Amino acid sequence: MLDIAQSKVQSEDGIKGGLWQVDIGQGWKFRAGVFDAAISISTIQWLCVASRKNDNPFKRCCKFFQSLYECLRIGGRAVLQFYPDGKHQL
Image (cartoon, rainbow, N blue to C red; front, side, top):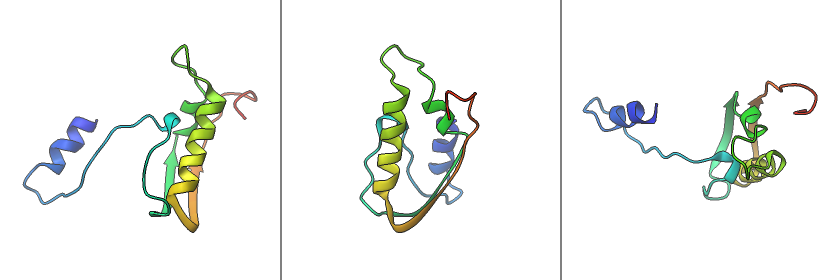
């Protein structure tokens, strides 16, 4: 998916921008307060899955929310859609 998006960014149709891939369970490094809002659809539940031996779902969720809070401006908003897989994820 990133390869397709990158090809569109580099094409001659005028799309400008940059792309990068990051594990949101490890946080990310945007400047503080750089975003007015954030939208997440079907992302959070994947933080609750330990797909590697060393994954700690609780710590991954904490890192995600910490990074989200830091990059939103004061008064910024986030809309998060979450499909929990049972009570243990809630």
